[in-house]
Image 1 (cartoon, rainbow, N blue to C red):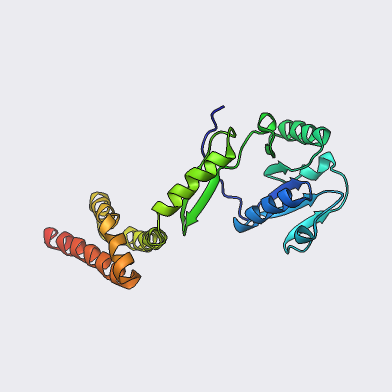
Image 2: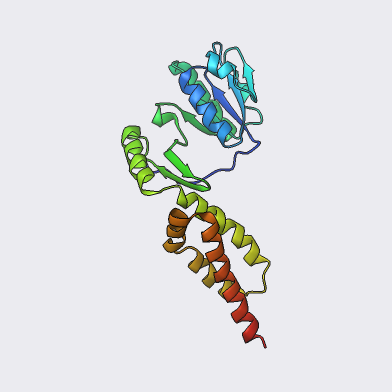
Length: 216
């Protein structure tokens, strides 16, 4: 089964997690890392999950109304009946749902991911083999060092500056291409972010100087 790749902003949005075991705990940790508000419903909740801040804990069996206000649903229980019920209720409510280790009950799946700052890279096998997806992630992890995250942060800073500059769209595009060149990351790796920032600023200043001369 093919899944459409999409990154979703869940900051300050409610997500429902049905289940209170170790797997549910890991899912909650991941959701919190991306700024979600989390509601957990389960009759039994592991201590680590119970001790997490910012999580709404409802210690009882799942009820259909628990989905109210949620943007997506994750079900991590050992009960086939609960898993199927949550799946059906989510579909009826038009919500995305993931039932752990039950691909046929999922409308979305979790890829294996790692990040370098704002650079987020994911690998997925469509649920066929999470182990292989992790192997791919580890290979990618070794190929993308921390300089990638610093480079992207620098690009974001300068992009905001370019949008406020006098450069036209074409000139901004050319500057952006130069700033994205691998040698900027080489500077970061060898000499640090401040040296790279100076090199990037020089590119911007040269473009502004050329634009100024052509307008005279």
